[in-house]
Amino acid sequence: MHLIVAKPRGFCAGVERAIKCVETALERYGPPVYVLHHIVHNAHVVNELREKGAIFVQSLDEVPTGAHLLFSAHGVGPSRWEQAKELSLDVIDATCPLVEKVHHEARRFAGKDYTIILIGEVGHDETVGTMGWAPAHIKLIQRKEDVARLRVENPERLAYITQTTLSVEDCSEIVEALKARFPQIQGPHKADICYATSNRQAAVKAFTPEVDLVLVVGDPESANSTRLAEVARATGKPAHLILDSRSIRREWFEGVRCVLLTSGASVPEKHVQGVLAYLNSIEPCDVEERELIPEDVHFRLPPNIA
Image 1: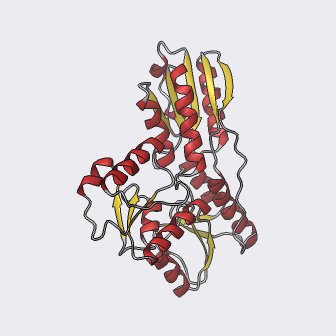
Image 2: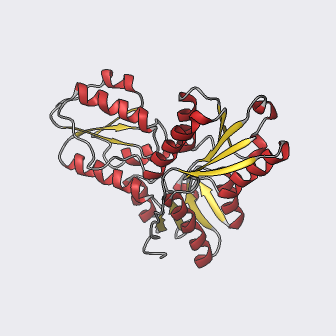
């Protein structure tokens, strides 16, 4: 069996930074260090950090006064900052800088009294955080069909922003629908979908036509991992989102001679290698790593733990 292993894959700069924030805080202050929500959407990463002394909470009410607290890569709204201040928490902000860019756009457009259309997933940590920065101004839509149902007070003072981990193609269709209905709508100076999401989707689109099957290593809770599998399926090829090698079923490979393997932006490389080892145990594999777009992006740690 021939395996094409896509590159880029795995950790993006925002995920790399967020994990390093937790690890650095644990080294500097010792456990426990508290994290609001999962630092990134990957069960393996969360469990490993939990074993090192990180405590993941869903509410700041679970955090003792004066404790060290990290906000996850997905970001939070201002109410979380206010509550953390009231509890005298030492906050380490692991929000991805590209998510913070979206927050800045929300504040900028809200400051101009614009209605803001946020393209994103209902209930996702990132969209919840973004909406918190301009709740009176933001309307959330998820699908192209939602555009026709939009009601805005002043179409001349209208803008859109997006979640960073969407399908590039789906998001583009929604934006085009918005522009068709509201010709004066404004958008961000630079696309909000992050470079890693775009690059990984581009690699899947480029390589999938050559294969019989696509495997995406990633957590089902990860939006960007889910999008990778959807992008592959959109080409007409079967694709499976797997947390690790234990999720694989042998029957998937009946009649399969070529497989594309990739991973979401919050997936440790060792789990990709675990999948490769498992596939080699089924039958000898010819492994080809193929790079579409070079990546060399890194973000600095927050100043208070740099």
